[in-house]
Image (cartoon, rainbow, N blue to C red):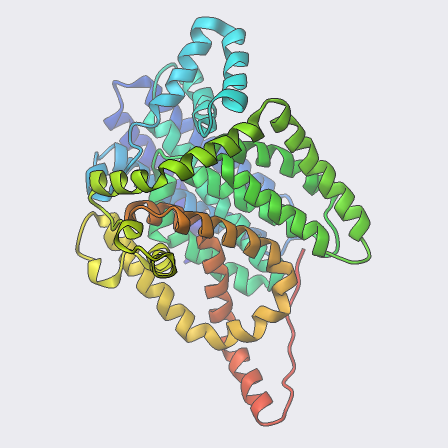
Amino acid sequence: MIALGKIFFLFTFFAFLVQSLYFFGDKADELLAVPMVLAFGGITAFLIGRNLADEDADFQINIFFWAFSLRLWMGIIFYGWDLTELFGDEDASGYMSGWTFAQNWYENGFDGFVSDIWLVFFEEQNIGQAFLWGIPMFIAGGPSRMIVSVVNAFAGSMLVIVIFRIGRRVFDSATGRIAAIMATFWASMILLSAGTSKEILVISFSWTTLYLMIRQPKAIAAKDGLLAIPLLIGIFVMRFYAVYMVAAAFLFRALTVSGRHLVRNVVFGGLVLGSVLVVMYAGGAINRDFARLERQQRVVDTWRENVAATTGSGVEIYSEYESTSVAIPVATVYFFFAPFPWEVFSGTARNGFGAVENIFIIAIFIVGFPAIKVFFKDKFIDMAPIFVFCVLYAGLHIWGLSNVGLAWRHKQTIMPMLFLLAALGISYRKVGWELIRGRLSGRRAPLTVARST
């Protein structure tokens, strides 16, 4: 079925074109999404397919087209069929922030563009996604939800490729393929990628940076380090605290990648991080960020209660449990496993998808646990930077958990890690059992893990 990705994309594109003309015939600004779909699909297929030495090129093209097509269908269902209320879309009006930037550029020209760059980097936080969306909206000449949806759908589809390449690099091609297939058809990822929130952009940028960290087994290549700089900047302007977590993972990789290249990697890693941090410090960004975190800590209890009360979608954990030794484990369970199986028919369709997915995650880990246990220790050094990022990111949101709705959104940032572990369990379950049986009987079963760069 995966081999039919190209055909499915062609069908999706023409269906997208027809539906766009029908739903948005009187909104010319929305129609720019159509050529964007064709450009994103064609350029990506060309860039992946030109590497003739890559045996997995055809799979990557097809899985990309599957992922992109599914997200395009979800986007048209959201904003063409107008079913956002059914599936839930917390940031349905967020796309208008992109048009605000575009309007400033129309009115003030290049000066307005430069002033908005300064605004995004040094004055206001977490609005960088609106600047990115404003560029195609400026070309379209009006606010467009479909433009934002297509941009996010593309980012979510590229994330699938990144997950595959991480799995192939650390484990083998089979594990990478399983992880990519899971990410492609995972309902929550499809919903996030089709919407107008910034979530999928942050996730895609973060995991692409993580991939660049580990792409070379024995060193951090200069090209990868340079590519990481704009990604780190992109993460910073969209979610300022996430860049510090990615930077910590980057430094950890530089320290652990190889003793032979330790000095070179530390120096180069320090230069990459230093160049970003110097710019942030010079503009007062770092001092501002820490000041904001201090303010957030002072008001976080009130914030949790207000968000839980206004959304009606969650449980305010920290006001119910006075002891943090109890509240933190409870918040951890909510972060990873809410919505729970018994909530499958409550709330929105998105809540139901999440509950079913969590059942599937639990089942996968139970079935694949022996393989995960055996292979995890062999790949810990390769995966360590990714674990550092996931632990820091999950830890911050467990500490600041306010309700199930927010937990669902932020959990998606570490879902690629769960995809990889689940894929590992599926791919190596049989081998893992053989290894365990061999050790119990005193025999040493052969172990071969393919490495790909």
